[in-house]
Amino acid sequence: MRVQVRKLRDAMGLLQPVIPKKPTIKVIGNILLKDGKAIAMNLETTVIADFPEADGQALLPLSLLDFLRYVPGDTVARIDPEGERTMSISCNGSKRTFPFTNPEEYPPTPEIPSLDLHVDGDRLLEAMEMAMPYAARKDDRPVLKGVTLVIGKEGSHVAAGDGFRMFYKGIPCKAEPTVRIIPEEAVSLMKDLWKKTAKPESPAMDALLAQIAIARRIIRLGFNDSAEPGVMAARFGEVTVLVKLIGGTPPDFAALIPTTHEHSLKLFAQDLYRAVLQVANVAAEGAGIVRLQWSGNELKVSAVADEQTVEARTFAAIEGGEGCIAFHVAYLLKYLKERQGMVEIMCDRPDGPGLFLDGKSTVVIMPMFVQWGDTPPDEASEGSQTLEESEAPADRDIGREEEHDQPEEAPEEKEAVPAESAPARPRKRGSSAKSKKQSE
Image 1 (spheres, rainbow, N blue to C red):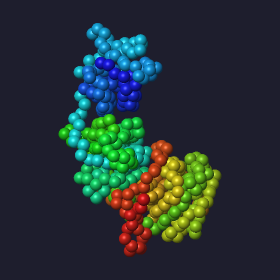
Image 2: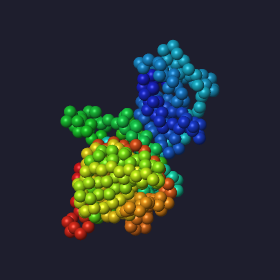
Image 3: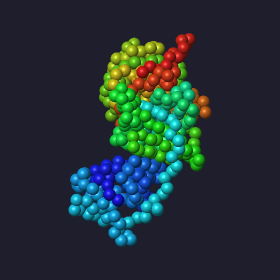
Image 4: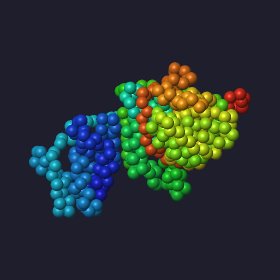
């Protein structure tokens, strides 16, 4: 087999993140070149990249990248057998040998289903990446360990939740209903491949159509349910990704979003972020509790630990009169860090869920139980309830975790949720006005 070094190096570099560092099956530590394709897999995901130069078949260890990295890209590499147990790759007077592995030992690739569902790739992968930090980290509820993709005739959305928080974001897609749970590792891999390979599918188009295709790059999706828990195929650019899905039925995340509220606070996200930072150290020394209390046009942010108290104040546009609620400091910091502009926080009462809106996504965070007033708090009695412990009916359970995980860095959000796919905006209690949809 003869192939240009640059193309081989690029293909191997593209597939490198797929290959496990310590494969349980030794053969999948290699990249398979076969029938015009370059293939890599782990136990959950298979990636097939178009590679027309592969006119034969060979298994290449990933370690060859170290050799190819220092070879001129326009050089032609020759991949040849050397006896029964050795292969070699030679180019520009350099040569490296490596053990021969029979390509027939490589696991078969899953069948690629019909790719009938077309989705705006930028919007889909942005939403899934934003949802990832809200997925559960523990194994007791597998359906919470991935990102849920809900496709429907009236609209579609991406959601995730860990029991204490949940994320919801609409995506512009209307198709036959289906609900799938995608492992977060596969989401990370797809996002990485999308950045490197996605491009308009048809280069032979006029300038106007080319601009439209570039502005709205498409992922073609399909699902194979011939074996549990099912496989999702995604095709974009020159890459096909096959993902083993998470089995089970996810919660109805949309039904967990509060539909009424008594209090509404509108303020700049970074003002609240700085206020929370000022009290974060004291909160961390206690139970991680940050108290929010408001009246007039002022929001007080405070924390208590042992004999310490700290507070910060910021302006807020308040509806519904004075009120209070408390959240875990880590969840507030994670949500606020990367957000710019205005956010709106809605709630009914101190022990009810808090609804966070920024015009781009919807986040629900469960409160911490605290003692309000001048009486010193009993830290042993303070804590956080889960969404399943709130007023949500049992069929809205989204699971729980016994301890708070420290949230990861929040992904940057760029685009607004289309009005037709956003959840209904909560109504203020006592109002007969129709629910408004969250605008872009």
